[in-house]
Length: 340
Image (cartoon, rainbow, N blue to C red; front, side, top):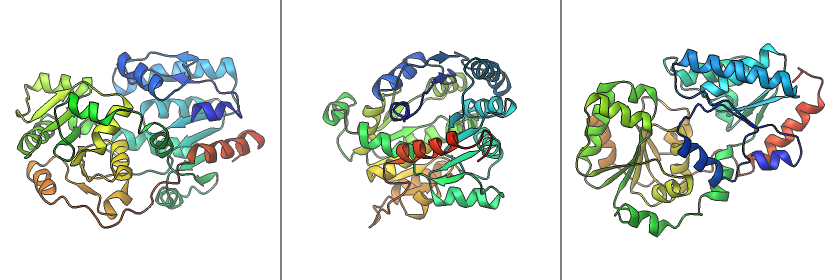
């Protein structure tokens, strides 16, 4: 998204440092051929209020210095919220990528972030008609565009760059005979009962499980004294291409990640979502995704019932989301400041 945007506009890339593992961050930028950020805040890990507050200060300073025509924010993180709040306070138009997603669970920090960001945005760039419909129900109709999902663009360009055979050999697994699991959301990592139940469910599975674990997950496991069974191999977080190769050849993916739910769908791999709800309702309706929450028996039952649906409808755009976003950004830049 960043490089094609720079062919048409002057972009200043600001990296808040919310995802605070340096190795993970550097690998992400390098693998996806992203320009190095012009501004790095390095806010690191903290409570929601502390983290968002630090970002607000840094983003406000950047807006004051560079006076952009618009602020482009992505997703539903604290960085998204801070960018939107800082821009709104300074009367700079906001463009939100992944607008309109809803879990309808206000206990999720991400839900608060996305609802507030959408209410402040001049340009709402939706991945699906469902997302646009969510906005209409909230009375938001101006500036809404259905552009598809930029992650589909990324998958098409970078998803096949890893040597799949080497990735599988690295973890000693065979195609279609293992599972991939990821857990990172606060509702699971910060709740010892839920995390323990998920780990127990992974330990119950009849095949090897490769479990790339985020630092916060490892810390939560260590703090609670939780250990998965011998069939679960806990590994360091993987780079993008290696993770895609691992997911593509798995029997199924078990995750609480929204991104991995979509990637599993696009790759034609069944997904078991370790949450009670999802923003990506179409993947569930199509039969490729099953919601289980953290319940051990429900997770095992979902795995036992794994089936490959007969069809896989085309979801979340045609892989050209970036170009549609850039077109919409150009219209925003050409409009009177602050209008939609």
